[in-house]
Image (cartoon, rainbow, N blue to C red; front, side, top):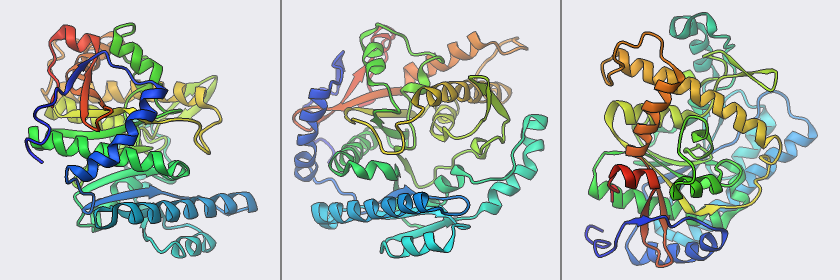
Length: 384
């Protein structure tokens, strides 16, 4: 693959994604994927399907639909990609009720069960980690679901995929192939410098905000980064990636959203990506064109409150990561004893300008980096 795209210009100016370009460009991805010799045979698509507690009729039906949709998507990629198809894995909780386990076994796919005892152990140790703020009870842990595949599989590339995205099978297939192309090209140029690659999903990422930041109409900062950074609805990481246990629900306490206390947790991708940037100067890439458009089943309700919660959690994670990096002399915090929001925003914004890149795949199926207005002003170079 090396040299295959060298005649192309990878850094583009202010070419923003639109619904039309997203629809048009994705048609070229599959063609380019095969022509250029890309392969997903050593990759794994890890779908998270879980149910905590007893099933009722509604939740049982929903669970069955998730499992069936994953099985159907797996069949689609096997038929379409053949020997180049990735391996499909379902990750779930080991205390799942027997009816759910039977549904999973009937899928014919590999099932990985996470151990809830890990979350309980972390909860018991939380006072040593974060002190009295922790109100963790050791309930179900996303972190264990994300870390589990690294234990037993000799697979070098892992995509974490929210099961509801299989309701858009053609779009999901295009995103997976597009992300793989970008990752492979990046690794040729900068081996072991990519922390994470994600794919924009409407309802999680705000595409119009991405466009405004690219054009310089708005700046990336701690107030809006939660609307455009990676999310494990669809992201790709390497085999040795470890997500922080601090992202367990309530391990780091709770935060007030609309007058209600919500547990701090989730958003593992941001905490992982920021720490990789601060500690190792690695890069994060988000595929924004094409993106998965339209409503996602199960993600339609309370989108605004999710953004509010995510923004608050991002701020807390950012302060924690920056403070720890300062204590370990990874970054210079000067004489600032009280770490202000302004200082955190300054450090994070500068780090993201240097190491967070938006990408698109053009109408020829060729990956490109789209630099933001502020990146161009700062003289930041595209990594590919």
